[in-house]
Amino acid sequence: MRPPITHSWNWRAIARAGAAVLLSALACSAVRAQTDGGTGALIGADIAVRALAHLGVPYRYGGDDPTRGFDCSGLVRYVFLDALGLALPRRSHEIVRSGFAVERERLQPGDLVFFNTLGRAFSHVGIYVGDGRFVHAPARRGQVRVDGLDDPYWAARFNGARRVALGDDSFAPAPSIPPGEAGEPLQRGL
Image 1 (tube, rainbow, N blue to C red):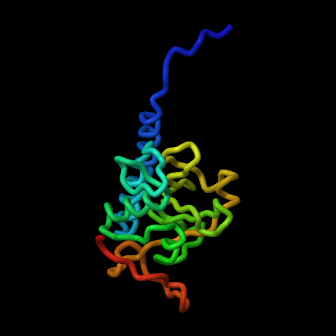
Image 2: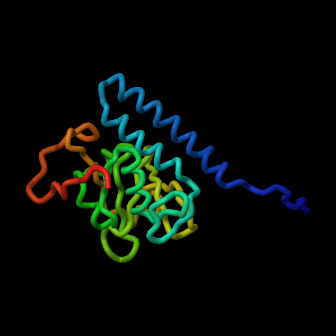
Image 3: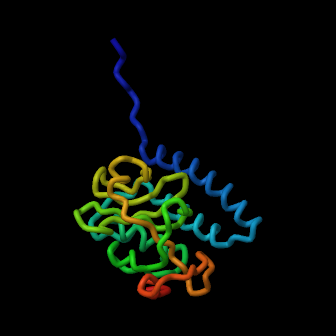
């Protein structure tokens, strides 16, 4: 007979340890981007790092503050405002109109990933952090966490991805976009 488990897991500490591993990978990518002159990759890595800093924050419907909790779009909005001073729309189906479409194979840290979780397109949003993983605030399990795009649940619900481009194109180069695909203009600050 096995002895009873006498320790308790500190899930926030475990989440931080996992974040440290992801941050190491992002730092290596950022150093390569910096030596190649890619400031966009550095900004994307900064967005990913800021999102990962909120692992373990509780889920709260309508939440947009780490002290009270986040919902999915509240987390995304908070991180982009914190990192770039950029006020994204409040709801995921509005955020999807920001930036430019990105193919799944071309995802970079800091890109936004969208899912159909409520029977309607773009009902959930997260921030891609690299290596096929994204950080988000799902209602299920009740806290900000990292999941994989290839996890069966998320893979079946993936709707697409967007890269937010600033007016000075410092985060993402502005590709040629067909009319009607460019999305809404973004606002800095609140």
